[in-house]
Length: 401
Image 1 (cartoon, rainbow, N blue to C red):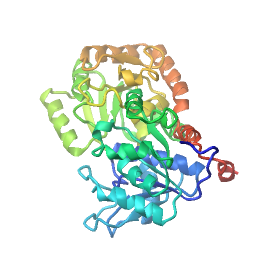
Image 2 (image 1 turned 180 degrees about the horizontal axis):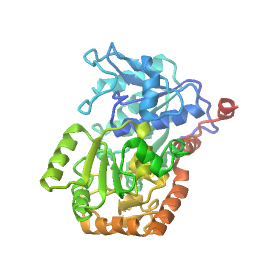
Image 3 (image 1 turned 60 degrees about the vertical axis):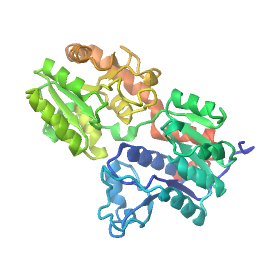
Image 4 (image 1 turned 90 degrees about the horizontal axis):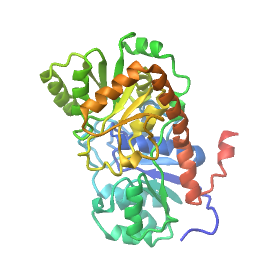
């Protein structure tokens, strides 16, 4: 049940999963949304796990640069992992389950009256402690280990919103008994400020050491096995005159696909490795074509809301994407992108070639995508979530005055 009127929180915390900061894409989303919420609710702090030596509190500028944030994001850490030696968690790290409860009790101890979290296990504890909670969840109910969690959440007046990123997730949580009033459907977003006032393409390429005159096709993001990288490599084989750059990925995945590329004798494919979030807009804006070619074998094809999609749309470069049902309301074939069937190197090749040969079409699609993505800024998303949760953002004018 919702409060009859907007509530005005005085102490706000974003309770992370305990792996903040790291290279993981979910922590990028956490950083961006936490920063957007903080612009509306200035008392917000992010809570995470840490070691004893390198605590996030002492590295705020580094975290700000890493995630490409326009302002400082305060982080408070619980130094309960003494074996952690570095500031950033590595790719294999999985936070201990006890941290989810520990973070909730810490929030209660600190007097938080509103928390954000992406862990249902954390929300389960915070609502029982009487703390107003906004839970954002990107996984289906079947992936949460304890059914009791949802029984408590859906019957708690302290759950102010359940934020999901896909229609399929919304339907599943409605079926579980959550009310339409509680569920907020919001796709992921983009930090539009990172894409404002970017240099010209030629200047960017010179800065990054990329070919100035050669056609370049770029993919940014992780290189997981369901990302259709094999399809992209097949397309590269069919377009030897085009340079293909893959930006991102864990070292193990880079090694796997670099070996595959070598086996295929592809001289026009380069793996550039992981880049800071603040550098990604430059690579995306340097592209003649950006590609996002998910495989239909991906387990979350019906619930994904890829960050790279919204970044691509903001970059001003034309997009070729897999036609995913979950993105049908955002991507429109020949209106703001070219859509191809999954796992089809022939269609991917022909679509890339069409955009390279038809610059007028490429520019039209890119311009339309930039207009579409304005709705999906992190700031606008944060406002809509808080409005749905009936959380007052009256402080916003004070922050910006």
